[in-house]
View 1 (cartoon, rainbow, N blue to C red):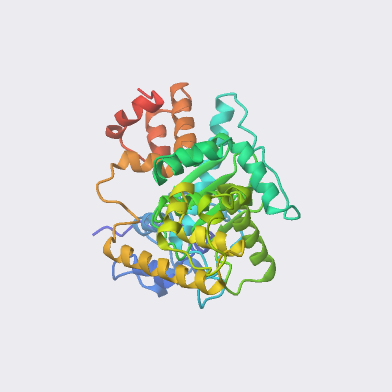
View 2: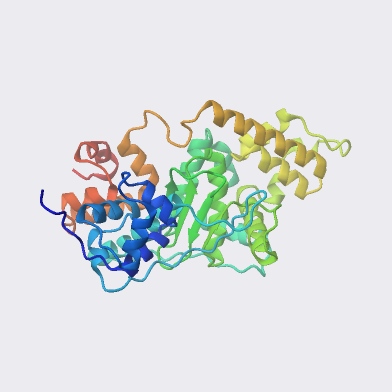
Length: 397
């Protein structure tokens, strides 16, 4: 039998590719058949043995890197990693999982592709108009953001449900020159949202596993990160042992998000709050749900807003928060397909993941002759059979 062809991969590039995928040698070896051990992967990285071409192709698949990159003389420059604001219960700062690392890289690559598309179309990318600093009051930034987004309270209250609300907020944020992506396949305990505050075309990502109301809050939290020009990967948790500066930023972004979604003067003017007795500071679940439905936010958001304005106690807030969390866990256990809804058409799923702004830009570039059909499908990660469903909205064919 002919000897397997060996591939002269650069050892330093092999190490770089693995580390930027947040993987250990043992985890890489586990993706191969039994013939490849952790010791063999270590030999490749040390330059003491060359992988076969088939093995290098497998590494290319595992690390999600082009095959040609492994033949470079030195590792290419990697995208800057957004600051990690996550803190999980009982844990310190955790490393990004391979899945999250790949999603962050994909978001950065789409942004660079979008900038190239604008250049080929001879158009200037939209300039993100919002700025702010953490020296300003959250209400000031919240008002500034609402004015830029252009929604009145009456319009907000008129949305039929959380799905219409999420689409409306997302469309307006994209209209400010932000690429909004919905991230699949990431546990909510690891990440609820991320932001890449590079200008122009800043990026935000929200976890697709969460409810639309939770994603709405995530978008406003990440919008605040973009306003203060601070990239980050977030879980929004204020109660854990983060370093003071990182906790301060997350608390600030949460406060601004609250002001965008339910400005204090509007929230406190609601009849249910005005007419509620001062004592006891206990709220019926029906009232909480009514307010949540009106503002299109979560029930926990409403109780937290009541706490902030001293309309309920810390004990009541903690009790309701725990109750809602247990309900969430129970619902997730009943519906394990929550993160990847069954029966959702693949093309429709890709459009929701990529967002309307990026998807339309890809189609516009294709229509103007700057992308081949194959290149367009590659950017969208869809097949030709999915194109007809885009025709009515984007006029692609």
